[in-house]
Amino acid sequence: MIAKATVQFNLRQRVVLAVVPRIVWALLSLVGRTWRFEVIAEEGVDPCLMGERSGQFICCFWHQCVLPCTVYFRFSRAVILISQSFDGELITRILKLFGFGAVRGSSSRGGREGLLGLKRVLDHGGTAIFTADGPRGPIYRAKMGPIKLAHLTGARVGAFHLEPERAWTMSSWDRFLVPKPFTRIVVSWANWTYVPTDLTESQLEEKRAELDAAIERARLRALAHLGKAAE
Image (cartoon, rainbow, N blue to C red):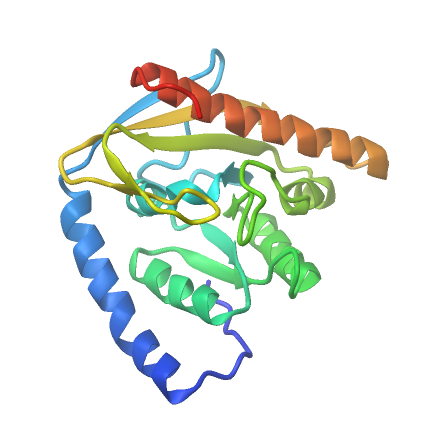
């Protein structure tokens, strides 16, 4: 599923959208073949989404590990919420080449439409993915979107992080990670967050904080597994 954006782009942007996604797909596919993934999980957690569609649930990760996530989950056919912007359109076209679907919207633009689109995905047995602190941060703080979607649908919310052993870290708000060729990447899963459909607004905020803590536990466990210091 790819939801079309309604944003109009200028000539330069249209050229970029026509050319860049295939270049990124080719480079990422090539380098991604050299990455070695290692899965760890908290006790009682069954890692999901590797190799096939795994059913109705929501998964969340921090924006900084988009690149390794794109390669690792490329067979999942999951659907991700992406902002209605030029950058969002560029990301959507790249993800389409890796087999992902996209619903357009964000916390600031088209949020309600995006959540309803993801609800339809879940209603049909699909999987929804959020970059929980995207698209603009603040870093390591989940937006309310995944919790609201879980509240609407009753779907469980998974939390994970992919940490490369060796990577370039960009000077962006999210400290974006670009794994180096031939590096090991730890796929770290935390416990599920369950959101009953009868919660109040204050209880939903408590669940958002619970999801925050779960994704951070996944990140910190991955760092510790690699012997790296926490930031």
